[in-house]
Amino acid sequence: MKIGQPEIITAQGELTIRYPVELAGRQQVLWYSVEERNAHLVEPGYEAPLAGLLIPTLTAGEEIYLAGALDQKQEFYIQHQLLPLLKIMLPGIGGTKIHAPGGLDRTPAGLGIMSGFSAGVDSFITLQDFYLSPEVEEHSRLTHLAFFNVGSNGSGKGGDDLFSRRVAYLRQTANELRLPLVAVNSNLAEFYSDAQLNFEKTHTLRSASAALLLQGGIRRFLYSAGYSYPDIFIRPQALMAHADPMILPYASTGAMDLLSTGTEYKRLDKVRRLTEIPLSYTHLNVCLKGLHNCGKCRKCIRVQLMLDLLGKIDLYREVFNLEEYFARRRSFIYQLFYFDNPFVKEILSLAKTSPRAPFYMKVLMLLRGIKA
Image (cartoon, rainbow, N blue to C red; front, side):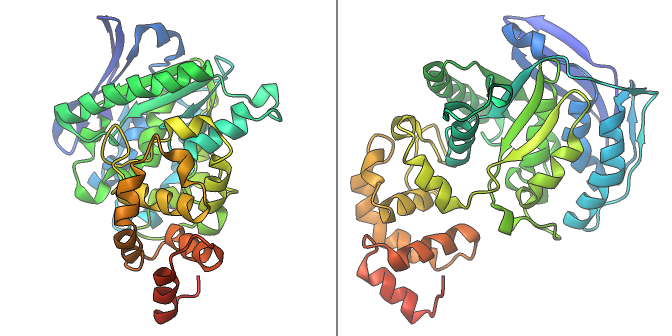
């Protein structure tokens, strides 16, 4: 893979950085764009595209050639730490080597501390720990929120439209918090056409790529963890999120630290703490499918069931259709028994002691010999 000199374009209130890319015999362009008012945060170096294109390059079995200098810290970490880790998680990928004309010794160019914000459970907990809590020390307090278009919104025009609508929706929450929301749009997802490299499996490095674009003003990026420490591991074919606390620091640079946060909490702990954040009652959004909670996708179902078993679901009447939830609850509970993951195990464990658990749920657990 070859990444050429970036082209910077300012037009219609947006700053766009375009990198010519040669990968797997194809000439393509990788681009990122931000609102022009956030241009002071942008560093158009090679660290962002390198992190974003690392997995597609490994899959193609190619070496990496950059047209300009690369941060020495990132180059060392990727070459000696991250690549061996990825080879375990993505068996069959080829080895690679980074070629860059010289190295840079980047230092923090700004004091910003940023976290991605989707209004989901994980991002609300990061918000609580690093902004809302009175115990947050000033040197650790969030200064910015971010939302990235790197695959979670779908593809094509529909994906772009959903991204724009989500940004507008999230900006309302950010305004209430008096925090700026920085949106980064990109076509990075086009380089992940392989079905084995879908967003759920590769979102860690995709998001790291968009974050690194902002190292011109952000010195620390906090990525909300999806799993707790007991569920952190490096295994073949595993979701990359299981290794976030290891992957993210190895994509960091001298100018920006990338860190996983919230790994100390189990999912149930997070949902309990969520119910103590009044802003979440009207702004929680966990849906996989659209702008608002559909109530039916696996993430909506999990959160509703946890809130129900905790006796807190009425607090979320504005963000979930509770009448529809209770009409479908039996079907939702039956679906749990077809999945084996840490989140389902926590729901079943909670059900054993919750007075809110339906009798048939406890009977099903006994009949199936489930020891949650």
